[in-house]
Picture (cartoon, helix red, strand yellow):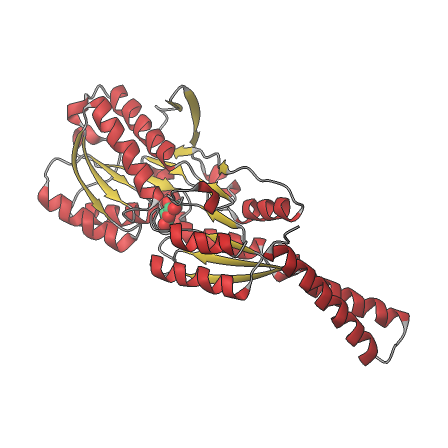
Amino acid sequence: MSVSKRTRKNILNKFLSVIFAVVLFMVSGCGSSDNEADNNGSAASAADFVTVGFSQLGAESDWRSANSRSMREAFSSDKGYELIFEDGQQKQSKQITAIRSFIQQGVDYIVLAPVTQDGWDSVLQETKEADIPVIIVDRMVDVANDDLFTCWVGSDFYLEGCKACEWLYQYTSDLGMKGEDIHIVNIQGTLGSSAQIGRSAGLNDYVEKYGWDLREETPGDFTQAKGREVMAQMLVTYNNINVVYCENDNEALGAIEAIEAAGLHAGGDIQNGDILVLSFDGVNENAINYCLEGTIACIVECNPLHGPRVENIIKTLEKGGSPDKLEYVSETLYSSYQSVNEVSVDGTTYPVTMLTQEVIDTRAY
Ligand code: AHR
């Protein structure tokens, strides 16, 4: 019968913990039973630590900071984990190096939040050969063989995009506007990331469906500074923009700065010169307050609290169970505009959460 590397490692850990306990017992001079209990207890807990290597893609947005916090809280040493956290600084090469170092360190689990979808096959093949389970979180990987990772948990980014567009369609239809009256620019996220691919695809499908005028799509890298820069340039190039689709809240904050710097107004009165701002996340406090006052018309939630979800997956694996291969997080839409109460995408209806101060105060992040 072949014994996997992982099983061998567990056996070795247990063996080392017994040696450790015996040595402690001898060093303590075969002391009192209280001490024995303490020594045995600490030896057992040292062996029971679960080691998790987490390759986080970067620190580009408030969403990302909340996500990193959630992971650190879920995998604290108090709870019996050793978390090795590596920041990829938006570079896939750094993330690949981190994964290889996790393999060398013999971690129990690898968690990967990938910056882009492509280019993971080789390194995931290495994790498979090392017999280390890999949990993909937030964005997805696009690999030839899905057996290269254990499971994934995150958002349906395409659905998020469709929800935002359906909201826009209903809002503008209610104003009596037609498809050709909608002049949109898209400030995209990091090109090649699942969040960008899904949200841009949602927009493009609705542009085709309703005949909207999509003037330009340019990446804003999910940051406020780039969002401002891109929007400022677009306002110089086009004189009829009435909707800006920002692929996250940090970009939306930058876009609003550019709109105001150009002497224009972000808001819902788009038949009288306002530029309507659509956004994603709902984590940044300024963005959510802008949504409350109507400066941002609608934010489609993207939930960053994946720490407990990944922890549940690891608990399931520890017990020998099989977590779902794909776990989609359910998410809402926020708006303070009363005219759209719900949106329907592919036959499913999603209620819009009407933003009030009370809703803001009771949110988890
Ligand atoms: O992958 C999730 C996206 O990444 C969030 O929408 C964005 O804010 C972040 O940077």
